[in-house]
Image 1 (spheres, rainbow, N blue to C red):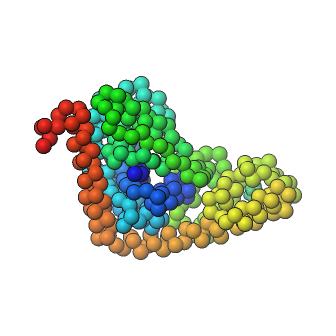
Image 2 (image 1 turned 90 degrees about the vertical axis):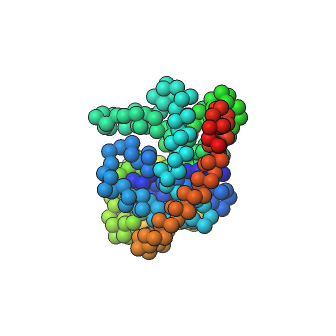
Image 3 (image 1 turned 90 degrees about the horizontal axis):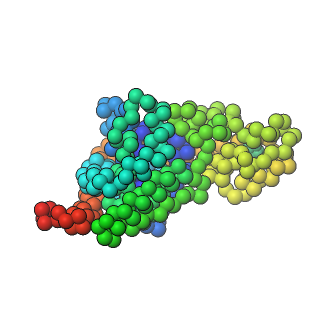
Length: 326
Ligand code: SF4
């Protein structure tokens, strides 16, 4: 069983696509997967209620367009399966404050928004643990920035099992082949707030405008200087989007100064857009199928709830209150 959360946080960029989505899509052939649009997590930052419905809709559209198949996998909305928060509360009662306070995201977000530090922000790793173990997931596809959270989930699982008896498996993180591509600045993580992204729905012209000025190997000052693809973010993008032949051609051309950075980027642009164009076409088609998207989420809720209720029956039995829940 696989579980992964999808943030309904607006436009997706290729960092999201390469770091998490591609992995989630591939795992569908190997495992039964539950993918949750995690609206409760999206509420840990300031949000506009008028935009929430559309953000959830867009997340569902984007993930189906990219390849999440609702016939194969369960695509559901977290807040429609109330067992997520029921289990999170129980996990709250066994999770030490010291474990939560060392999570790097809490520190980062508190620094970014010092006026908006609240319990939900501090406690969301416990909800995240509940999201995963509610379905007894063994595998969680993650980007490298999520590994620390999953380690915390494993600790919470060990504690629950030791207090109340073996109940949950310890989930394993599954990193994609390319777990991270940096932003166009070549230094920071690709992030909307830093403005260094290529979005999944951008036209080829818009992407070229960004790629053509993106940072490469900064030691390669002139066209005749040999470069080092291993420290170039454009080359990492090649590994995510280009076929082997082009990857080898660019690596060799870079090391021998046989290829210029603009030529290298043009090859990347063609390969990247070849992959993004069918996703964009599907996005356009699905945006007009509101009933279908709502039906997918309703069906996902039904299927997820069946599993979640079974887990909660077992949890209530383990913690000694099952007779009141029958
Ligand atoms: Fe990067 Fe390609 Fe330029 Fe080499 S040739 S530095 S891999 S963009």
